[in-house]
Figure 1 (tube, rainbow, N blue to C red):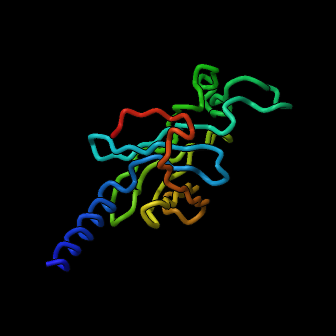
Figure 2 (cartoon, rainbow, N blue to C red; figure 1 turned 180 degrees about the vertical axis):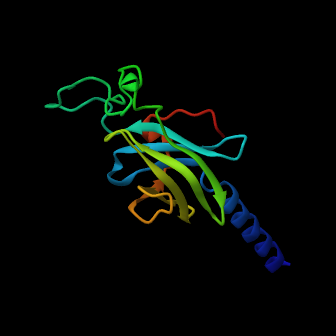
Figure 3 (tube, rainbow, N blue to C red; figure 1 turned 90 degrees about the vertical axis):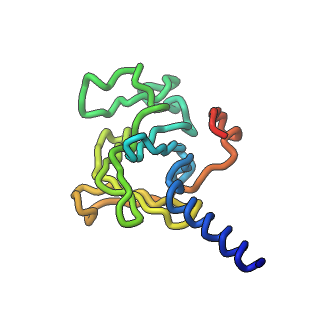
Length: 161
């Protein structure tokens, strides 16, 4: 009986991991920012910046002391101080296929570039995000993000349970 219960618990854990594992808060390399990935009603995975290590432009920057905004966007009409990096959409149109998220985009506000996007869970706490120049994912850059559990440490308030 114990083996059946243990097997059932492992099955439930694996289903949770494969179905909802992408949803959550993810710390990007070097701890510069956290993105929040959600699953929309149409099964699209989307993400926005939830936290920045340096909320304001640093000393020596031409915008020193100003809250960071999307100043490098190629669309000049979007380079406005009201378009803050906090809350900025940086992941979108990703759909799950063959155990990965594919077909979407990743936006890098630091250089104003949009990339073809994909993502894959390496384990329940590690997400590999890939931004590619080509839609096949051959030429690009991958980064590993780590799941963030203690959101209050970063001042992130949620209404999630």
